[in-house]
Amino acid sequence: MIAQVNTKERRARFANACRGKPVLGATLPLDLALFGKSQPWRFYAGPTLALELSGSMAWLAGHANPEELASFLAFCGCENAILDEAECPPPNGWQKAEMLTVFGLAPGRTLPLPAADEALWEQLAFDREPPALTVARALYPEDTAKQEDFYSELCSKRARGKALAWTLQRGSETVCTVGAYALANGQAYMACGQTARPLRGKGIGGRLIVRMANELATEGYRPVFLCSPERVHFYTRLGFAKLGEYAKYNN
Image (tube, rainbow, N blue to C red; front, top):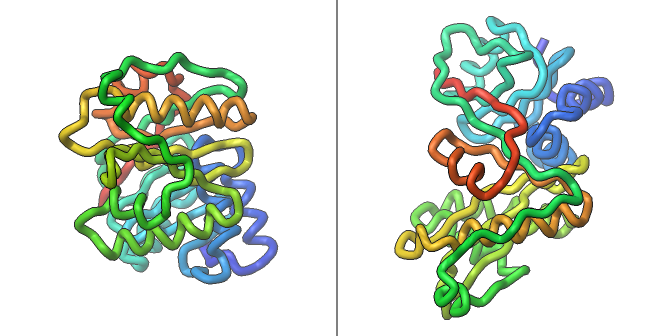
């Protein structure tokens, strides 16, 4: 039975389902630790399942009965789910939308910095600790609700040393950002890499990603990414290794 994580036993089940899994082994346990009390409606466990709700998306680690899972997600109003098909059958009646590839870098290993437009790179100021609101606005310039949610979570994680965000600035403009938004269980989940549209294709985003991944790997973390099909070539070209795949299903 899928139930809210509100007992010691369910917390243990949640942790066991996540253990050792790339990306999910960092993001789900960290979110539960930081937001389980303030946002208990987000976290659920089954006998061998960990499940987190994020808006209309469900993130699953472990196994669940597909009929029960479909009923539960429908009750929660979920429209999408990300799961490992090797151990979790999809919810009954749901359709596969795409495969998401997990890339990573082994702890202690570093990659060569990729080529970039050097003249442009020299014009940019590197900021290791940009204001959280600056990052939120760069990522979601037209959506104030997402800005507020992102800002709140980044501040909570930063305050506990569980997240990093870097930016490149050109004057007062944020032209590139990348972050590690779950530093937990030996992993560094990197996401939200974005470059201002006029400067894309000039290599600055890839260089910033590799620079952060190298630093985290040197510190003993395993940087990991979860990317859509159109980004597979990008991470392969940068030198990251494929670690696995998750499936995204839509209702």
